Image 1: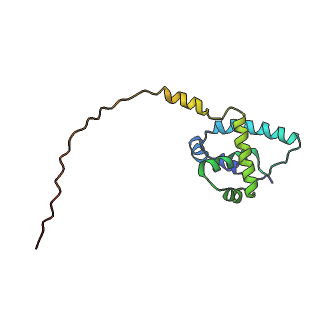
Image 2: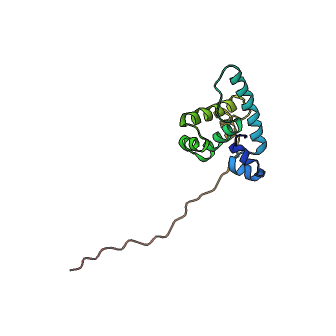
Image 3: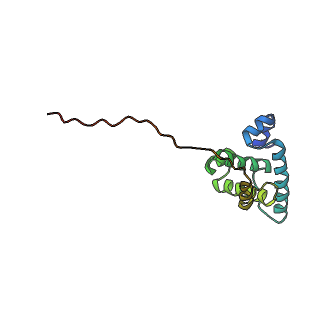
Amino acid sequence: MAKRTKYGQLKKFDGAEFRRLTGVKRQTFEEMVVILAESRAKKEASGGHRSKLCVQDQLLMALEYLREYRTYFHLGASYGLSESACYRACVWVEDTLIGSRKFNLPGKKALLEESAKEDLILIDVTESPICRPKKKLKMDVE
């Protein structure tokens, strides 16, 4: 009997539902899987420890962690792993994808350069007087 995977359950979703659930398009997900599978093959060829989850489920778990802010305890309960195994898998997925240079974000300098290119918008705010009611004076009542 084939092992059921969480990713196997997502195959029935169309593109929009898949993106809504995972946060990425199916094509992007598949590109990430290719990068992770290559890295995992190298890791296992050098005698690395074999994971209980397939690459697709590891990526799905990391996306759930990043998208839904689920705790490692909840992820472990969903995937049948310990908290530490979930942590290691999520960190491995993040580091591998960032190391591939295909899915990393631009650095702080690039963001600062882009923000310097923004158009300048000036708004004329002139001060105008506002009529406010005068405070009532307290009357001494004897």
